[in-house]
Length: 337
Picture 1 (spheres, rainbow, N blue to C red):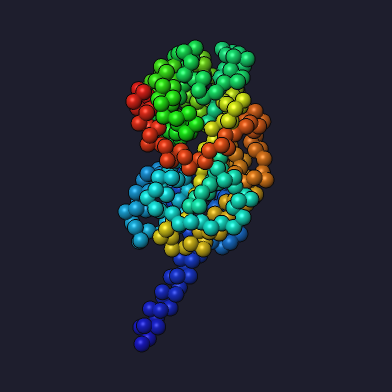
Picture 2: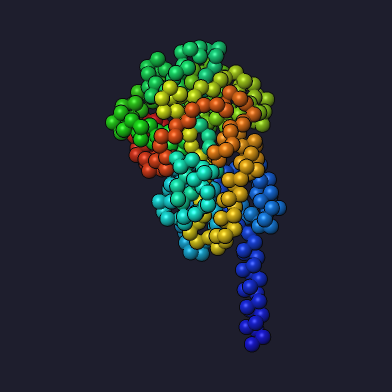
């Protein structure tokens, strides 16, 4: 009898310990995120255990562990990656109160919610390209033969590029996008390689006229956090936001959802709510140079030139996931490395 009582006490204490933590699976890699999670622990007493990895690796682990998984939250850096996890029924509905007033409908769904956003834009060097030539540029214009051999961009397997092409398919249809891609790849300055910062460096050096990259990479370079040379390079280039005269510039998100087999669903719910507070949003955006997601906060990145623009709100970011496989297939068919 005593043994049974001791076992019950042990199980009770174990449950209490488990209920005082969350296990966060995340593909994000910012040191400043860790500081934010410490603030959450200070505010709530809930410890955040961080498991880092690439989105597909984290997804596979959660799938393999099944009902035994200890993962509570999945926090990923692309709407397409979130959709992939959703498609495999990894999430439960988050049921966040007042979500309609906090986060735009296009940046969330019932299973996950955007936490930050970023824009995938163009960069040019005023030394080699006149602003008047490109001030009304669109993504569609990038297939124009005037840009032959002049565009720097990452590989086709990059999820940011896949999401961009997925959005173009949604707007223009498969046939038009396929034609556009065939012309677009002929305009590449080199065989695609490197990260977004590598594309900006090419434009700074005059090795390409236009670079396709996310806004926060430019801000990261210009802040000096990536060293003096990259800071100098970023100071040589200027951002340009495509499609300002029509639908607006392509935006994507980092977002999170509560996992189906989460052992700490109540704590996970509190964590999601915390990420959507003004305090958390300001912290994230100040340090990662992304844009806040909540409606009552304005873009306030250190560099004014990337704060004010018209974003594409006409389609849901969920579409990126729905069309990503189709986009990748068309990209490869067009010869995008």
